[in-house]
Amino acid sequence: MDSHESTFQSALHVMPGVKGGHDGLPGQGSQDAASAENHQHDHHRREMTTQEYLEGIESGDRTRLAKAITLIESNSASHFEKAQEVLKHILPHTGGSIRIGITGVPGAGKSTFIESFGTYLTGAGKKVAVMAVDPSSSVTGGSILGDKTRMEKLATDPNAFIRPSPSGGTLGGVARKTREALLVFESAGYDVVLVETVGVGQSETTVRSMVDFFLLVLVPGAGDELQGIKKGVVELADAILINKADGANLIPAQSARVEYERALHYLQPATEGWQTIALTASAMTGDGIPEVWQTIQNFVQSTQLSGAFQKRRRAQERDWVRALIEGQLKEEFYENPKVQALLPKLDDAVMSGEMPATAAAQQLLEAFRSAQAAK
Ligand code: GDP
Image (cartoon, rainbow, N blue to C red; front, side):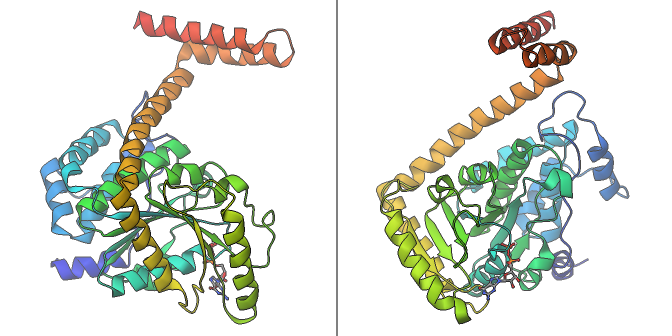
């Protein structure tokens, strides 16, 4: 298969995420169905070596890039090790993209916006990767966000790569896979990485922790509560985009923008030295899309100049180490047989008021520590 053909084929084929009820770190018993599924992908060939993965990423060949990401999303312990090898080697070639998070409630127009914005960027000569962090992926199989059928033009664009949310596992597991896939895209020369998530709960904080710029997509006319927007989410954003500013919605969108602009002055900005701004756009007509890109470029320029950009990236790396440790410890704790044996009994005792919560927690931690010490 020549490289043109493979590019074309993979552009039409979004690889599914790897399934598995795991958080993405290789704890006990992680040789699950996922590894069987992964082997199935490659059943006709031997396992690729680290070197082959690295060459694949470097070549820019989409099929091979997709394979590297599948490796990273695998839940099998042997794949985990190889993935870490690959990551170690590509690390010096990462960091070059602008990482953009996009959130908003379902229906706000995120995928229409990504289609329009992504196409605008590829038209300007950029390579664009689209990923998703879908908190419901363990239930739905990860099809709600980043689904290529919602971005038909971008999905066939040779300079865009859409990767749906890895399915299965906890938010922490999905976050790890997304962060590592982001590094793979960067080392493969992608200029802009978009990470989409849905405007409910913890996933926004997770995406904020892995991007440079965070965009909140809203629609005019609906009250804040209706849009599920809590003040906390607004405070994560570097820009608020009032979408659907077209037709009968144009005037309401413009007045919503003015209102948000005013309110934003009273809120703590998400990024040091950057005043969060409100914009209007129509993802459908493309009006306002170049202005979104201009805003992001202004943001990057001014925060790079002030050092806030670099400072955030360093802090994100440090926090990421902490998050990995916390995730792993938590998993080891709850998978510990002694803890599992004690937990239901102590839960009952706490719920019936026989035991204070602190005492129950102490007893469980004690059981865990003694099991660890006996290892
Ligand atoms: P998501 O759930 O946030 O990804 O939202 P979608 O992108 O799927 O959009 C939800 C609906 O809003 C779809 O019917 C879109 O066609 C429509 N929509 C999205 N953007 C615009 C826009 O700028 N103007 C108008 N009029 N409709 C839009």
